[in-house]
Length: 145
Length: 143
Image (tube, rainbow over all chains, first blue to last red; front, top):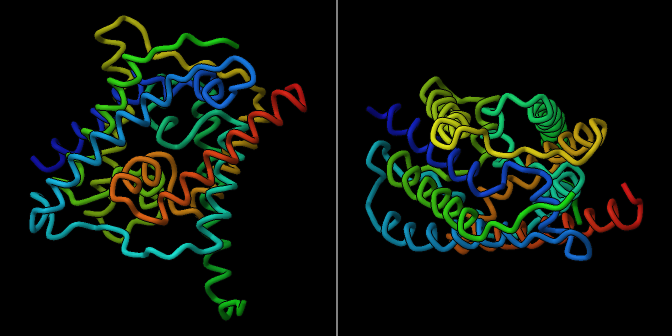
């Protein structure tokens, strides 16, 4: 029952990404290309997703616990640090080069297109290298600024 | 490459993405972030942790197949760039989302919906650098 629910939740996400255009790099790059072939569609994706989640979370997070788990797993940090900002800046560069973000590319794997598989393998390589770097940095003493 | 403006389909897709984020929080108590789900799959803490991630991912991948079933065609995936750029971009995205601890779904939708200062800062940062990158690649380098 739990796994069926989780599967269907993933499916709703995958269908949403598919019909929204987030799985299409051409559309995504055009959203950012205001000076060229601009396509504002993705503002509607982000806007729709954000408004629905904002309202839904108000109700869900008021409950004492989720239905199929002991507690809500929410990030607790609120401080801004260098890895967050630099990492996000670097992510944007990769997104602007490729037109794929992870949330768009993972459902797009279902189309079986070789370009998507290529992107996801490169993505996994990047995540792996970053994890190795993170564990190397964690072993060193924290940098004093 | 020009693409057609699809406000209603995109809004509908966005609503479904939001709905799935609410449902994942309501059931498993988890953030619907592609980066977090994928990264945890590589380094699971136990089988139960691995299984929910793998199951959600399996659902995601079936999305285009369901769309194909109802419309007769897969959602468009137009890749107007070279394979080299695709691989370079993918690797850079992997580095960035790991250090930045999230991407468009985790920070841009779920984190912003929680009004998390970290997610708001992350989202503004990557939206700006993506825009700059697209401008540089298309209008200065002419790729």
